[in-house]
Amino acid sequence: MIVVTASLRCPEERREAFLRAARELSDASRREPGCREHRLLADAVDGESFVWLERWSDEGALATHRDCPHVAAYRRAVAGLVVRGSTQVYEANPLG
Image (cartoon, rainbow, N blue to C red; front, side, top):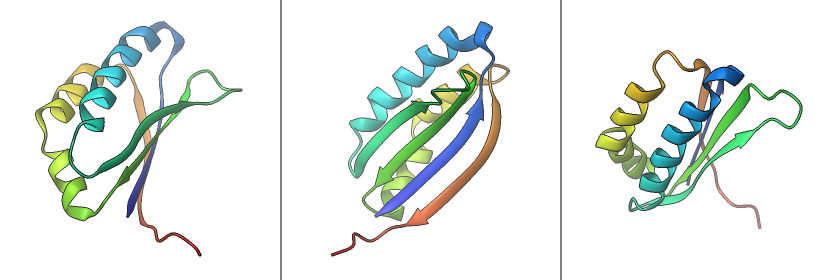
């Protein structure tokens, strides 16, 4: 399984537009083959801080996702709305 985390910041005044684009991305991504989880997490203390959490069945599913039109549409929609932080990609294996 592949796990992706991506942090970003979005100022309060741009939040509604960002969340609209995020919902569209997540809705489409969850329908993709190989998507196990796709969600946006909001920091309970810092209202401008968010983290994407994604789980994919394998690297191929993630590679296909990155080339999907809805990913490109999301990137265009949030350009200028958010400040990207770091992105990490992990290979995860369940314990036990």
